[in-house]
Length: 149
Image (tube, rainbow, N blue to C red; front, side, top):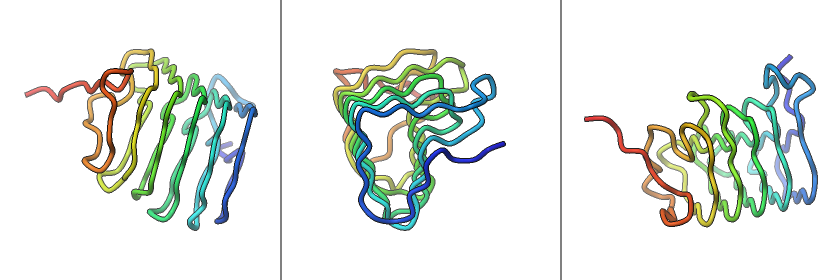
C-alpha cells in the first residue's frame, strides 16, 4: 500500500523529464523518491504527483538538487527527516489541502530554496519557519507564514 516508487540506496542519480505518480491517486499512497545511504539526486524538469512525500531524504548524508520540477497534489513535496542538503530552484509546488506542506525540513537541513512558485493554502512552509541553514529567496514564492504568538 505505501511503497516508494523509486528508492535510491547511495550513489549519484539524475532523473530528467520524467513523471512519477501514485497508482492510488485518491489516497496519495506512495513516496515518490526515497533517498538513503548518502544518495545524491538531481531532478530536472520532472513531475511528481499524488504522493504522500514526493522526495523523502532519510539521512544527513543525502542531497537533493531540484530544478524546474513540478510537485503536484502531495502531502509534502520535500521531507528531510534527519537533515541533508537541498537546492530547490525554479520549481512549482501545488498543494491541495490545508494540512499539505511543500517543504518539511528538519532543523539541521542545509541548502537553498530560490525562485520557486507555490500555490495552495499553506504555500511553501506552512506554519513552520525554514531551518537556519537554508537560504530562502522571499521575493519569488519563498514566503514564510509567521507562527501565531
